[in-house]
Structures are given as structure tokens and as C-alpha cells.
Amino acid sequence: MPSSLSNTPSHAPTDAPDKASIGELRRVHFVAVGGTGMGSLAGLLKRRGIEITGSDKKLYPPMSTALADWGVVVSEGFDPANLEAAAYDSGQVPDLIVIGNAVHRDNAEALAAIDSDIPIRSFSDALFELAMADKRRIVVSGTHGKTTTTSLTAYLLLATRRDPSLLVGGISLDFDGSFREGAGQHFVVEGDEYDTAFFDKTPKFLHYHPDSLILTSVEFDHADIYRDLDHVKSAFRSLIEGMDEGACIVADWSREHVRDVAQGARCSVVRYQVVEEGDASPAIEADWIADQLEATSEGTRFRLRAPGHQRQSVLLPLYGGFNVANAVAAIAVLAREGVPLEESVPALAGFKGVKRRQEIRGVARGVTVIDDFAHHPTAVKASIGAIRARYPERRLVAIFEARTNTSRRAVFQDAYAAAFDGATRVVLRKLPDEPIYSNTGTPTELFSAEDLADALEGRGLPTGVFSDIDAEAVAQAQELEDGDVVLVMSNGDFGNIWEKLLAALDERAS
Image 1 (cartoon, rainbow, N blue to C red):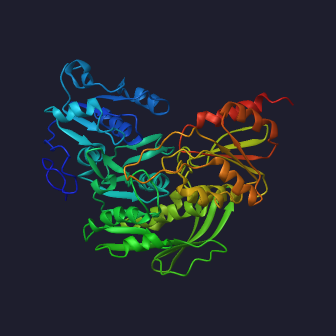
Image 2: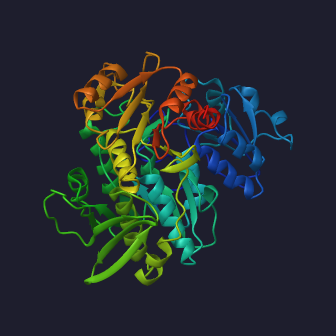
Image 3: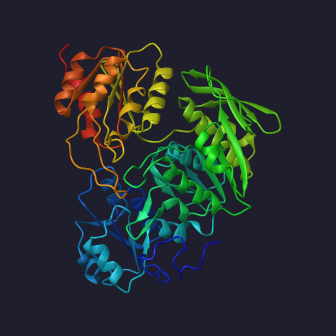
């Protein structure tokens, strides 16, 4: 069990503020409340009847709408005055201030919080202490698949009457939101490797102390805080080394870097693997194996080989081998938590999914427009493969925006060239050449949409580059034909290109 609430965690750096004990909570203030995790925790505490306020830069839907619906009062901009008694309906100062990892160390409001006598916490510590400490903790980690696997695991627990709690970095369609507080013993959380706060540069997932850990994948990402792949792997090793001997890791054993970081674990390791047709991966000894994948109109059917030589025919209402892997991980971790296959497997067919993960935004003039969160080259390749399996006979147009702090760098320039195979045509957004700031001191060379377009053209894939979203939506509407599928990939709002494209299709002259 973690140390007393009155002590600073042993993994926190020396410049972290002392952790004063948290008493009874009546008022809590969130600095940078607009993040998915921060907003979700604010909403969860609000539903407990706690007075909640927050501050942030200008917010936009869906988080601005969600916070308003939850009754969270948000001040635009950061100001020490937001911490004063006058900012609260009760006329009293907060009992706790939570500081998000989007806050920089020169933030006047955060600095005023640290200098005050009010207890402060990072988001990760607040989440653990206030919501997770007395639960059985299922933490979902990995470079890819965390949000879907977290939602899927919580959904299966709910569908099998375990009444779980949940906090996830997306909008779960099964829970109509990003959090849930249940009466059951389990708390399912998305464990991110990103850093915790400006005063605690350790990964967020080190604060969650899992009883069961899902490890989906380990690849280089977050180039603003990690130097290279070995640096990323060191973070996952720290997570695994800190787990109790009685805990369990459910790991995708088909992935070399997962095997590398997990094989030294003190606790038990449950291994899973998905075998797709034509897979040239070497044979491994996995405990759970999914094979015989078949894309159907209902989703993906596959055979599940479970420990004890059990065989199950499974229907997953999602597409792509990576989603099958997510499902196997969820079923395996539930088995570890005492949920038998005869309960979890039938429930799988009812899973609705997560917004912005292969989400159909609409159909206009026979053109299907799909929204996906993919941005890492591995995720882009997997998403295109999944949509190609779902619509094997249709033309597939991929519209992509490299927007993250990592994808805007040249680090994945070459990897993207092989990520779009399966598309019929590709359209790339060129972003302004704004500087990218790094915590690692690594020189930054920017990603080039034009260079990627040239590389894709060299592979025989027609590719265009655009800057103006409104103009491009109109241009695409003129070229698209009945039956085409458009896959839009970005981790941002992309100027609402989905709705603009559907509107342009509707307005197109017959």
C-alpha cells in the first residue's frame, strides 16, 4: 500500500511541494481543469456533492459543455484570485487544489497555490487518494489502445454485474462520459506514461499502484519528454518494478519491447497474442491466443484459445487486429479478477466503443465519413487496415493531420511513409511551422507534409497537401463519389473538418 497521505511520494523530485494531509472535502479547485482527466475527476467529485471550481485557457466542446453540464464553474485564464474565498459560493477558500500537468512552472495561479497553506495535489495523486486507494485497481498502460481497452474492461465488469468505477481519457459510449463511480470493488483507469506535473516529472502511471496491469504496447512516443525508445522503456520498467509480488501483468507478448520490459517482473505475467492471417511473427508461448479473425457486417469474429485448452467463438463489434488484442487483454484481466469466460465473452458483443475511435460521423451522398484518433504511425497503419477490412471493396480516402508534439517533429517522417498502405488516396494537412518546445533538449526538426506527400507518391499512392480546412472540405466534396469512405485521423479538433465535409457534400450540386 502507498505511503501515508501526509508524505511526499518517494519517486517525486526534491522540488515537489510538501503534501499536507487532506481532510474533509467541501471545496476543491482545479488549475487547468479542461484536460480530459482533470475534468473527469472534477465531475466525479461534483457528483459527490463537493463544491468544484476550475480555471483554464478558453475551453471548447466537448469539455466546456461537459463541465457546464456537471455544474463546474470555470474561470477563463489563470489568476491567483481564483483561489480566494470570494471565488466560491460558500465564501471560503478551497480545501484542496489540484494542479494539472498542462500547467507550466511559471503559472501564477499554481505558484500562489504552492505558496498558500491549502493542500495541493497533482491530478494523479488526487485521483489515487480520493477515488482509487480503497479499490482493486486495474490500470491499462501502453503506447496504443489504452482508451479503448480501459473502456472495454470497465464495460465488461459492468455488464457482468460488478459495478465498477472508471476514469478514461476519452468519451465512452457505454458510460456516456469519461468517468463512473460504482459501488463495486474495481477501479479501472487509463495509465498514461506522460509526466505528472511541473513539480513531479515522473510518469502518471507510477501513482496508481495497480493490482492488475494491462500492457498493450511499448513504442517511442511523447518526444517532448522522452529522448528515445530506451527512455520510454525505462518508464515502463519503473512501473513494473514497483508492482507488488501478488499483482499481475497482462501483456501482449507478441511485442518485442513489451517482452523486454515485462520479463523481469516480480509478479505473475499473463501473456496474450493475436495471430492474423499472413502474420510472419515468430511463434511465442502465450497463455491467451486469438486467431481465425474474420471481418463481418457485425464486427470481427475470432477464435479465442484460453488457458486450460478452452476454445471460444467470439464476436467483437469493432474492427482490426489491434482491437481484437484489446478485447483479449480485457477478457484475460477479468479472468484474473474472477470473472469467468462464460460471462465476459457473451457480453463483449454489446460493447458500443469510444468516441473518435472509428466513429462514423455521418453519411452524405453515399460517402461515409469516419473520425479516428490515430496519430502515431503504428496507429495510422492499424486504423487504415481496420477500415479497409470493414469496407474491402470501397475507395478509402485518408485525411491526416500530424498535430501532436511528437508527430509534428521529423522523428516519424520515414515511418509515416509506410503507414498509409491500404488507402486509395491520402490528403495531408500542412500546419504552420511553429516551434516545438522540449523537456529533453533534443534539437527539433519539423515534420514536413510535402516530404511525406512525395514519399507516398513514390509508393504509387496519390497524395495532396492542404492548409485551409474550409476550402479542402469543399474540394473533397467535389471529388468524392457514392460509396467512398473518408477516414479522418487527428488527435485534435481538426477545425471540425468532419462536419464541414458532410455539409459540403450535402450542398454539392447534383
